[in-house]
Image 1: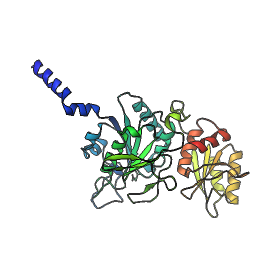
Image 2: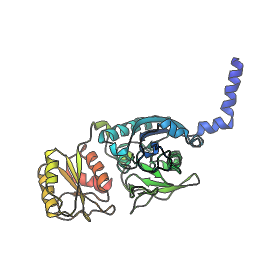
Image 3: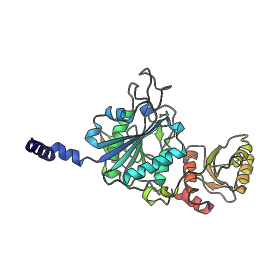
Image 4: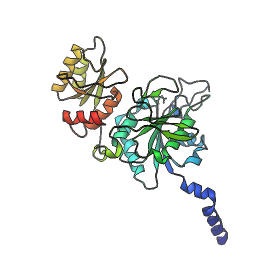
Length: 347
Ligand code: DAS
């Protein structure tokens, strides 16, 4: 009996499949919820479904081809709509990803997530995860139960990117709809369409065609192993709020931020971060109260340039939601406006 077991083991070891299986990268899929795990009663429903209804094992089981691309280890981190992601949760997620990537047997991580705040969580990990290994987020615009659901192909493509040696040291990436976006630039540009994730000014890092990964870009921003931010020192992210600029915008929004002990304010300004007289007064009051204020733009793309004697720091090309992620992270490191401005220019 033992001889037979030994011979069988030997056969498996030398068979081409075993060699292939051993050669496959080991990718951990962390599921957090979202529409990719969504479920609806009717397969024609693409709105009004339950997000975060399906577990990670079912998501992986629905894509058998994934096992030709990588050896998969699956973990359910959470199962929520990403509108309910919080700074505590993204901090815990980043710490878990760091732990996983510190394992010698793990070659990369894929994270499934909701699309609604998919321009926030990936950017936080881009700032804080200390690894050259690929970290790839993916999501879906249609629930798993829908006709032509996009989640399974997005998951297969995300694992394909994470398993590809070209993906090393490119910063955190976001893969949907055949495209590879950079966490620093990608954002949701449409409420419902499959091609909603874009970086209007900077474009994509690459694409996946016929199961192959094609890169054509690298980002010129500091990320992952080159970042100064160290999660081991971060227990919680300081409260930072976003205040939107518009006609008649009231100064009392800043009073509320001060009264609720915000440590930072991101101003989602009109145009290139322009302030009304009311917002200017509110921002100056907040700065006097010790709050760090960063002016971003509500336009969706472009750079907010520094202008002499205009109040507050400037967000470079970060949209308000990403600017908030960077300001929260920066405030765990320093309150020095000059240093924080450098972070906005380079991360
Ligand atoms: N359910 C929303 C979310 O979790 C939308 C989605 O995932 O597409 O972000």
